[in-house]
Amino acid sequence: MSNNFFENITPDYSKELFYTLFENKKVLIEKIVSAGQVSPTNFWYDQDTDEWLIILDGSTTIEFEDQLIELKKGDSYFIPAHLKHRVSSAKFNTIILAVHLKN
Picture 1: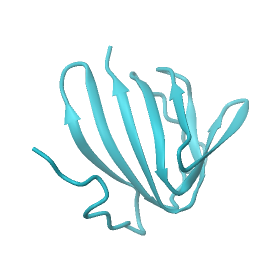
Picture 2 (picture 1 turned 90 degrees about the vertical axis):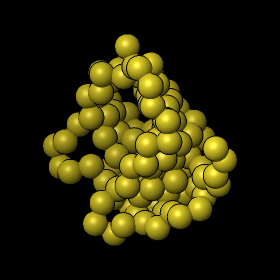
Picture 3 (picture 1 turned 135 degrees about the horizontal axis):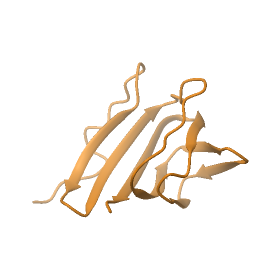
């Protein structure tokens, strides 16, 4: 099945949107569309999976306990499982491809 990754992208001003593109026992691939949302105050992701992501449009800043990583269009980043992080800023209509490697 073929489709265009950039079709049907409509940002939701109230929340970040997550679209599952593929999933099996070992991997989850998703498209994330942000209208500028950030993580709630004092909220940290603590995922059971490794995550590799690439910014396909827009930009975002990921906050870790000891650093900020600014990612712009074309940048990729690997987040190991259980490394606490949060989104501290995002540009309107940021589009991310995220690959979660399940253990």
